[in-house]
Amino acid sequence: MTVKVALAGSTGSIGRQTLEVVAAAQGRYEVVALAASSNEEVLRAQIAAQRPRVVAVVDEAVRRRLAGEFTAVNFVDDVADVVIDADVVVNAVVGFAGLPVTLETLRRGKRLALANKESLIAAGPVVQPLRSTPGASIVPIDSEHCAVHQCLRASESAHRELHELMLTASGGPFRGMSRDELATVNIADALKHPTWSMGPKITVGRWARRSPSTPAR
Image (cartoon, rainbow, N blue to C red; front, top):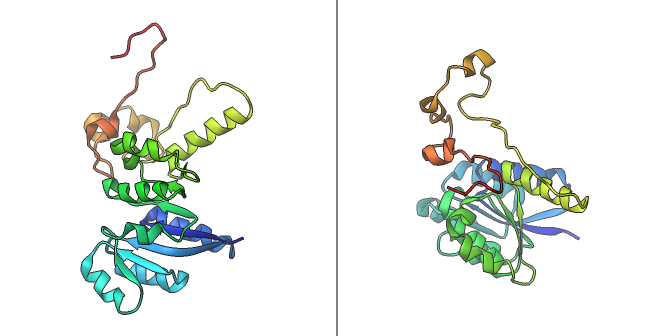
């Protein structure tokens, strides 16, 4: 059976990788909706390849140009149109703008492939009750939290307790540096991320390991 997929954030890195998976699956998936912000060139190429039923765009000028050729809706106001026909909704939207996709998907009892971590960080208490909607589920697909999810599932299936998880720094400003170069870096260097500007707490936040007898601070 063909699985119908709605892809929000289609022109970004995760969106493009999702479409690579779709292409490699050779007919297992049908992309029924694409949603993007403003990258018209990439979006047009994706539309030509996938022929979705609905295209949603944040940028109103881009939406108007596409509307003459496709069923193009306003992504901000018409999130329901993006997810309604899908079995699986991939939320690869960057930042808080992805929250409506998360809420609408779970509210409609669909599987949510979630790369938009901000949905959970900023609105966890709102998202959590929707997980009990019949059919609703969340599958993390972004790098770190997908890896954590797989570790937890493997531990559970093997009936073994997981005591510790370590996330290594796979990118950022220090990627490719030698051991000698790393010996001289400081916090200011760490905050110079080549891609993201997330502030000091997220960029270099530290969780200290503590024993059960040590009070939390």
